[in-house]
Amino acid sequence: MSDTSTEAPARRRRRFTLPSAYTILFALIVLMAIATWIIPAGEYELDADGAPVPGSYQEVDGDSARIVVDSLTAPINGLYGIEDAEGTISYYNEGVLFGAIDVALFIIVIGGFLGVTMQTGAIQAGIGRLVSALRGRERWMIPILMCVFALGGSTYGMAEESLAFYVLVISVMIAAGYDALTGAAVVLLGCGIGTLGSTINPFATGIASGFAGVSISDGLVSRLIILVVGLGLGIFFVMRYAEKVKHDPTRSAVHAMRADNEAHFSVRQDDADAVMTGRQKVVLGLFGLAFLTMMYGVIPWEDMGIGLPTLWWWFPEMTALFVLFSILIGVVARMGESRLTDSFVNGARDLLGVALIIGIARGITVVMNNGGVTDTVLHWAEQAVDGVGPVGFAIVVFLLFLPLSLLIPSSSGLATVAMPIMAPLAAFVGVEADLVVTAFQSASGLMNLFIPTSAVVMGGLAIARVPYGTYLRWVWPLLTALAALVVVVLGVGAVVA
Image (cartoon, rainbow, N blue to C red; front, top):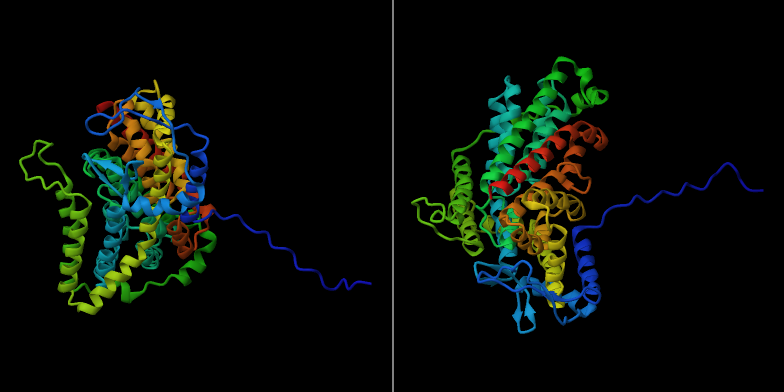
């Protein structure tokens, strides 16, 4: 007779988790290698600028990929941008062929620059000082802090760095009579909307523009409109909710946790009363000056009819710029040679994964190019958008990038995969390639405001102790409004162009 007093432990159900971006991208390389045996090879005639001529596609004899060898070597060849008699493994820009190594190196150096800046404590002290200065006027802290975080998101893609500010901001918001969701929204939506409306974000706009063969300044007006109007919508949405909670705490989406949250989040005076030194103020000035200089260097002032010297910078010059400013910030902060180099290397290490993603993602294009199927896929896309017109094209591209952003949450990886195909497609319907860049970054930014595969979303909500489902039910009206804004801006941009 069996002992019924003990029962076998119930089997735990394994929850499905989406594989990492590395696994997804490498799987796509293998699938694409297999596809080269199925998809017919073809090519377009090219104009003087190297762009495909609409309607000139014709099938040719292809060279199907060696599935194992090409899948393993594709990421390496994608970084080097090898060009040989068999086919070109690179992207086209201003009549010159490049590999992805310059983009990857730029990302690594940006990581070092951010590592040095964060090591000085200037950004953390600046936020803490702002919070302290607005004590007693917390209502105005919502728009001001959201603007500050949005600036970080728009210029350098502030994301994981924002996790350090959740406890401080939430503590102050609860002390002011709001709730944990208000504090989390200030940081999460501030950075997220800034990234959605990226202006010179090197991780989204910069990489996408590079692979699209356009300047990072192209489409800047449309992105500024999305940033300013989108941020206005976000601020209004958060402030309206915050005021409701302050007047009636029972209207809080996390009211059931109010007592626990008040006990858990106590204002950390050492953070809120942080004293910002003179050196840290100079560091912040240099930090901002680095991005302003980059923006000036890449804008084609001559083409815009503005009487300013055009520097015609691209990734090599931008990379050197951030190396220079890393050194300047280290010298101003008196970091010392050992601390400066360690901070730079540690920061670069944090973004090494992004650089590897770029190489793996570029490998997909390598396999497609070697198999002669890139132009075939482009031809199919040309037929799919035939007759939709510029406005329809802009909307379709935006909608297409939404599920792609879920599949590949890395904006750098998605840009590397999609831009070589989607950017040339814009010419077929008479719109500029920068419209595709704007559609890509807007879709990626919108999805990364709520998708569960985003470490920033899930990490921020975990710190704030806000259930994911609660956040999703609360934020969906804003997401709908932001999506409508992007569609309108893209539609108008397509007509104006």
